[in-house]
Length: 100
Ligand SMILES: [Zn+2]
Ligand SMILES: [Zn+2]
Image (cartoon, rainbow, N blue to C red):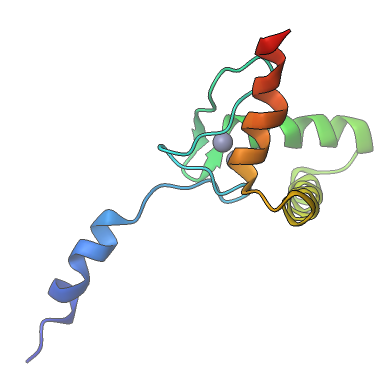
C-alpha cells in the first residue's frame, strides 16, 4: 500500500498562511496607511483587507460578503493595471505615507 499522505506531508506542512482576499503572507505582508504592517484578524484574512472591507460596507451600505467581492474586484483591476502583486501594490501606496 502506498503512503500517499506521507509523500505530500511536506507540501501540506509548508503551505503558507495567506490572506484570502489579497494573498499576502507572513513574509509578504501589506502595509496600513502610515506604514504599519498588516496582522491576521481571521484564519485567512489580514487586517488591511478587514479595514478596507469595513470602509466599503460603510461607504456603499452593503454587507460584508458584497464588500469583500468589491474589494477582490478592485485588487484584481489594480494588480492587472500595475502588474504588481496585491501586497506589493499596498506597500507602495500605503507605505508611501511614511515619506511625508
Ligand atoms: Zn489581505
Ligand atoms: Zn495583508
